[in-house]
Image (cartoon, rainbow, N blue to C red; front, side, top):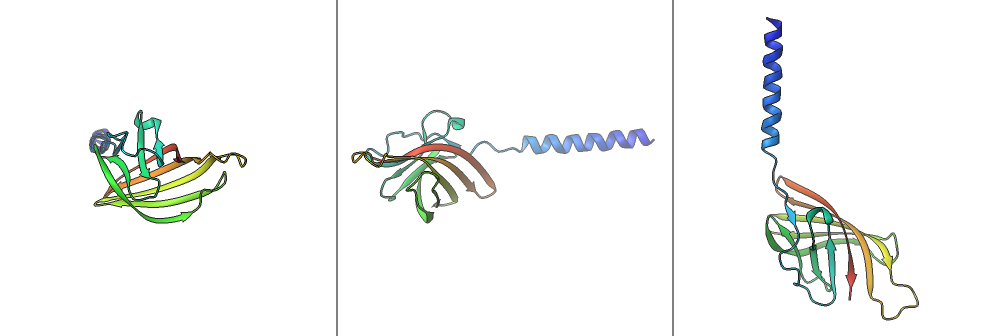
Length: 148
C-alpha cells in the first residue's frame, strides 16, 4: 500500500512540474525590426543572445527610445536617471516607460575617447536591460555606444 501512495505522490509532483514548464512564456525582447530608425548621433545597444542587430536605440537628446517588445518596435519615454557616463567604470541607471511596459537600464562605461582626440564623441558601455510587462520579466546583457 505504501508503495502505491509514494508512486501517486511522485506522479502528481511530475505532473505539476510539467505543467509549470508548459506555462513558460516566450521571450519579451528581440532585435529591433527597424534598424535604421535613428540616423546620426544616438544611443545603440545589441545583445548577441537575442540575435543580430540593435535591441535598443535612442535619440542622442533622449527625446525617444525604442525596443522590440513582444514582436513590435515600441517607443519608450525616458523616466528617471541616476549617475553619469564620463569615465571608465562610471554607472548610470535609467528608467524608460510605455503603456504596460517598464524598463530599467543600467549602463557602465567600458571605453571613452582619448583625452587628446577632439573629434571623438563616443562612449562605449556594457548594459543590463530589465524589461517588465506585468508579470513577465526578461533581463538581457548588452553592449553598445552613445555618441556621434
